[in-house]
Length: 79
Length: 464
Image (cartoon, rainbow over all chains, first blue to last red; front, side):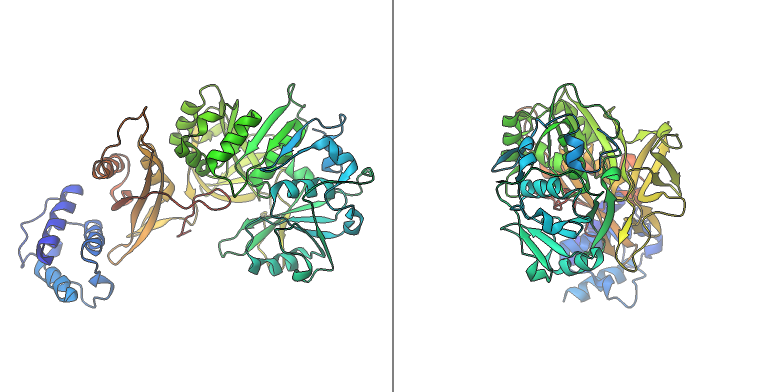
């Protein structure tokens, strides 16, 4: 599974678990408008660390604003 | 027992020679033998009025040393058998120990720089009959501090036996056993009880829980105590049905409803009691209704043991409370009103107080507090869960997240086949979601083969 598809499925999974209405995931989608709260993001980041073995947020200087930023952060960190 | 006895030996012989026995893993001793024998090779006089470090590995030997030395030494320092070598110097300095009693397994006092060092046991040797008690000896117990160095807690025989004071001897001798080591407060309580009531089967760190229970069963124990972690381990061993106690006691950790229910199911004929006690606060109460928590009327009542709740935390003032911590620059054990802050948070619901975890053990998820124990109680209520550990996981978004490690119950004929791990973790998450606020629900649940239980029989909390 690609980094992008792993992230997409985690967003969808956590949204279901947290009973959040997830906005359609596009690169332009602003994370604040995604329907997820900070607890959801915290869970996504923890699960991605287990799935991908990386936690770019630990060292990120700039937090991603859009879903596209979020995916790129992980893709760039994974390289 | 008599509350005016000057020493332990006087107390247990007040009504004539004791009939009980002490059963170690490899030997048994009749208490009556101690009237004319010594485990110190007849060198007791060298320890008169001294502060003595009891650095004995073997538990039976330690029990005999305590019985011989109490009433003679000025102060006895009960080193736990797992006390790390690097802590001895600190313990000696804080207690002002001058002498040491060790056994073949322990290190001698000479190596520790003490003037007197006596090797105890392993066997009793005939000696002159015991003289009368000389003085009220101070008992010093070690309790694990958060930094790793032990704290030294000063008790007297009177404070250690306050929960027993005035109790008549049982009509029939009792045969006690405990998973605890008797150098720890929970074990020492059972040791003192057993000496006044009958006999005691001691545990052994080298022995498996199955072997220990087999030995306890062979001896025919009637009463047995341990921490909830000890009991979960025993329940997991599948060997608890070997014993048939009339009384089962839990102390030292929060007894949740699941472990109480499991013990009631395992021992339908027995009284299942959970006690609240700590090395500093002493024994505060015992609850015998096999329900988690304790009746609210215990708080604010009058009696020798006073309980009160301040800032949601349980405080105890009682004759069983320790006097103070030993050492320089140590914190005060009691507050100005004489009470001990237990650090255990309680919440009242429907006329009952429930333990809500340790103050300071809190996980902070984005500014919202989570007490690991409240989450563990929900997880532990699942029929396939034997024990769990809830802890913080560092997280860049919320500071921390709640995670859980879960040990499952063994498969057995009564339970049938165990569902797959994925099914169980999903069920646990659903349970937590139904019972807890979203930030308290573990973000990750891992099934693990075992959880670390410390030498004191408590679940090791790495974040604590």
